[in-house]
Length: 128
Image (cartoon, rainbow, N blue to C red; front, side, top):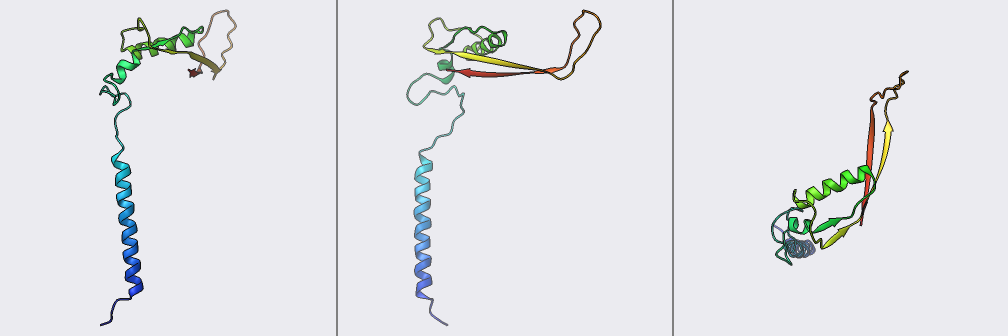
């Protein structure tokens, strides 16, 4: 039987200490993290208001385009959960919507009647 090599045991002890320190450090970092759904109705940490109540306080300014109006109406419905616009909004949202319409098929008709065609509409929204 031979004695264990002193250098290898010291290296093993050093590696174990580094691994243990890394484990303790990562546990300290992970313990500060919390996970919760983005649109949870649970109270926020700093206030007693829920996320849905905060969203209901956002007023959306009028827009000029048809597509922008459709997006605005959907946001108002979603933010207020069907209750409509807030009477006195705390926050204000400026909405800009641009559209790009592409025809996928062209139908040539000899008459003046409108014929349905295939296409796609792409909306791009920006907000402040």
